[in-house]
Each structure stands twice: as C-alpha cells, then as structure tokens.
Image 1 (cartoon, rainbow, N blue to C red):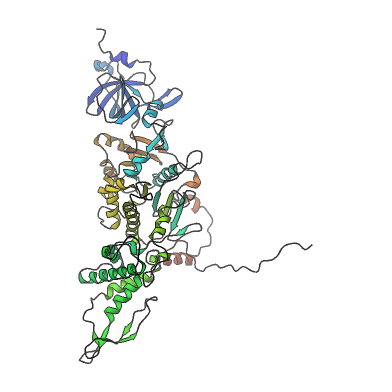
Image 2 (image 1 turned 180 degrees about the vertical axis):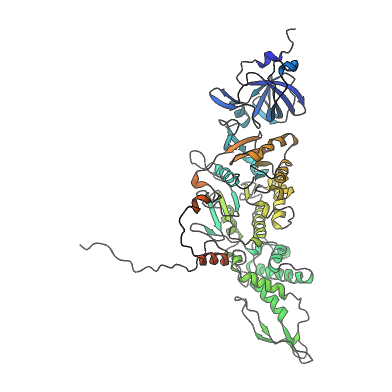
Length: 622
C-alpha cells in the first residue's frame, strides 16, 4: 500500500531539524520516538548550535498551515535488547515526553491548541527563525533578559505589559542569583544596547531591605535612605499618612476599648484643627475621617493626653487644676500637678482619666528613640504644634514616583526590624492610594504605570501575618492591574510568602530551590502540565531560571544576562579564604559598639571635623 505509514522512512528524514515521530497522544502530553539520525545531544543548523533532547527545550510539529509547539518535559530510553523485542526495530529506543503549549497560525503564536497531532507526525527542533515568530522580536514591548539554556543563540524575552500588570515573583535560594536577576531586569527597562534610554517614562519603586542595589543602579536611580551616603537623599515616611489603627498599634504596643477611643478621638480633633487652619485642597470638614492623611502633631497628642491623665483638682467643686509646672511639649517633659491626697481637702484625682499612662510612656519612648526619626520626626513633613508643615505629600510623591530617573530605591536597611512590616506597608499603601485616586490624571497609574519591587518579601508578607503590608499587597495583587500598579515579589522562601499573593503572580522566575516545601509552593502556582519543568530547580546554575507565565509566550529555561561587575548588587558571599589569609589588622571594637548602639552600620565614635584655614593666595609675585 503506497499510503501506508512507514516509521522507518519517516525517521530517516534528511531535514536537519527532524527529531522523530509522535508515538502517542494523551491530552496535552505526547510521546515522541527519536530518530536514528539524532545521535548526539548537539545539532548544527544553519551554522548555529542547538541542544537536542534537553529538558526544557522546544519542539515544533508541522500541521499544514499551522505549527504546534511543545516543551520537552522528560527524556528516556528503552532497555530491551533489539533481538528480544521486534516491535522496536527501526527505532532507537530513545523517547521524549512533550507538553503542548501553543500553536502558530499565519505566523502568529497563541497559547492553547485547536487540534492535536496524529500518530506518526514528524517532530522538529525549534530553530531561531521559529522562535522569532513566537517572540516577535520587532515588537518594542519585550525585554531581552538573557539567552535560552537549550539554544544559546536565541534571546530570552519577556513581555513588559504582562510582567508589570499581571505581577511577578523572583524565587530562589540564597546564592542562586536573585538579586542579580532583579538588577538585570530593572536595568533592561532603563537602557538599550546603544546606552540610550529604553523606556524613559518607566516608573519603578524598589524596596531595598539590605541596601544591595544603591550602588548597582546608581546611574539609573534616585536613592532615598534612612542612613544616607553622599549622593543619596534622606528617607522620610510621614506618620500622619498612615492609617490610624496601624499608627496607634505601633505607638502604644496595643490598646483597645475606651483607651483606644481616647487616642482616636484626640487624633481626629487634632486633624480637624489642622484642616481648619490650613484648608488643605480636596477635603472639607464634613468629609474628614480619622484616616484622612492630614498632618497633626504627635507631641501635642502625647502632651494633651498625658496632661489629662495626670491632672489633679482642688477647690470646693473639685474643678481647679492643681498645676505646679506646665512642663515642656517640645522637650516631651510632662506637666506636674500636686499629688492627690486622701480626705476631703484634696487634691483629687481626675475621675475621667482613661488609665493610659503606660501607653503614653511607650509613645514618648518612641518619640525620643532616634531609630524612628525617619517616621516620627519626618523632616519637612513634621507638623508643628498647630499642624503646619513645610512640605506636603505632593513633594513626597514627587520624590518617590516623579523623579528624574526611572527607578527610585528606598533603602530600608537602617530600619529597626520591629518596624519593618509597618514601614513597608506604609510605603506601599501611600504609593497605591495615591495612584488609585489619581487614576484619571496624567500622573496616575493608568497613564504611567508603576512597578513596585519588594525584596525579602517573606519577612513582611508571611502567611501568618495580617498587617498593613500583607493587606495592601494582597489588594495590589488582586486589583492593581486595573489601576496601573504592578508588584514584583522577591523571596528566598516562597513557602513562607502568603499564598494569596503568590498565586496572583502571573510570571514566575524560578531559580535554584533545594527545599522541597519551597519547590512545592512554586509548582502549585503552575498548570499541571508544566510542573515537571520545575523538577530541574535543585540543579539550576547560578543566574539560571525557569521562567513561566504571562510575560513569556513560551515557558523557558534561560541564563540571565549578568550586568557589568560595577552594576551588580552587593550580595556576593564574603571571600573567606582570601580574608583569612591576610595579616591581622588593628581593630577598634569601640566602633563596633557605636554602630550597635546607634543601629547604623556607618556610625563613628568621634565625628571628624576639619576646620579650613584662611585660603592662601598662591599667585606668584610679579
């Protein structure tokens, strides 16, 4: 019969891209028998080298006017001797398991398939010309982040729109290259190969927990730091822009019932006075709430409440304050009253006191603790006693979101660990609320989207946490795309990141992960037919990632392009052998204690002050 299928003839094709034939079809999974001509793991096609039969590499199955595309998920070989199994004659005994992922019709690639291949259909390796059709390299909406591991001549590209609006996660163990990958992706937004601005209106806000990126991205970023270096700006986060619940929780370490009402009522009164005095645009007294970002004085909040708690009265009607000393509001010195006495002579205690002295003492200790100055004494954003401020929130947002560079780095490495979650939540909430309410303006997120990069996310987005950071990021993950706010979650422990947040990340950069719980969490975010790709996570090289999801038309295993050495984050491991081999140097542990006490790595024991003498005129005499 002339039309009878001959597998041996099919497998002896002279096409250099030919790999073998479809042997079985089960849903989106195919089994392919490799041809005898595929004898090596490498193939040279049109002068370019391709790796054959590698897990994670791509294949193409021609179907007339369309092509099916798949990815290799498993490879193997039969162990049965040929003389004992006549059924495999004409075959090599080697096979590949393929997962179908999409099709190309008329040169346009789409995910999903409209038809299945038939038994015996030829399977081909995917060449650069094939993948160029898929990635559409002429489209300006893609970033080149590296090269495919299986075919190093092919660029690995990701879609900017899906990366930002559908959120993403960079996940990998310590030392797998997460920080370098993040730096590479961010730099790809900002510069082209000809050193010109790739996307001059890009807007990226990075929360740098360890201070790794300030120098790496200094040429494309504005840096705000709690402990700024030369060339960096001081980071301030105005406390009055926070929600009342989070602020009171931080200031008092917990208060409830009537005691909480004492704080909320006073804060509302102070905001109301401030609004009446300054007449802030966009808000009226009738629409003011306790959470409206209106400045008020924390010192006055403390003084007015502590005065009420300490007041004693004398006189026949017990209505005359027995004041001895008014104290000092600015210096946080409480007023003094005559001590109460037993009997009918007084002085008498204030029967209306709420019993919040302990909480007010905690508030005072926060105010005098220099570690919290960036939050509770926020520079030009610190209100006076009457609520007046030198700078409003527009100046703050202009620095964070409207700088002259496309990237803004908020270096939080100097923040105390107990305030990190509140700090991150406050920053993210300020940015999100501002862009949400300005969504119809040119400065809003719809007209100029924002990408928020969150390093060490497991520290403040843990599953068991329900604080401001987790709540706000969950809102961004669910609704942010509609308002032009995207999130990039970076973590070395994906199993500890809130599942709701991680499940909303449309693109996953999965790097080397050895912990089974972490791999399981990442696999849970992928479709069932692609989970086998992540079996390679424990053996990925440093700087290598499996990228899957919305931002890439094909799941891919790729090597991320390393930035120049001077543009890499400060996350490298210490060179132990090199440092231990050096001669002992003189050490001053007084400097260690100074940094420890001040909670600042660059603190010194004694400030070095150089007094300049009168300038000497060195002009030679005539």
